[in-house]
Image (cartoon, rainbow, N blue to C red; front, side, top):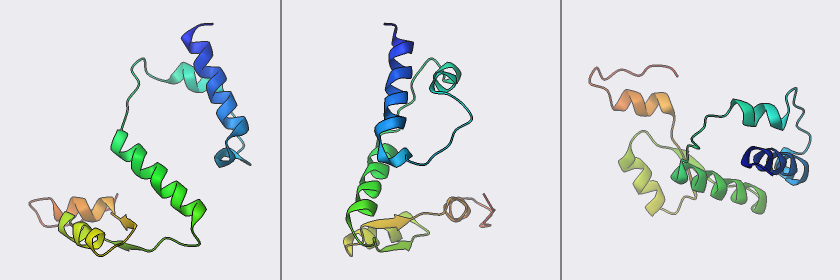
Length: 106
């Protein structure tokens, strides 16, 4: 079996067995997804770890406290205070980090 066929089967299995995808309707196939992927797999390991951790918390706890942070320093203070999740708005972070001092929408 080729690597492509293995990827297609793995994706089909994930869609069929993973409760995360229950009730999702698609107008495309696993083969379409694999065919349109690039030849190099991009891995965002920190984002993946954070998303996995948040997903597990959302499904194992009655609620997850969170606050928004405009800066990295605010985020660090929130972590030190014991928050399990922090919301970082892309446009707020971008506005804080540009020389014009302006915030722009996503």
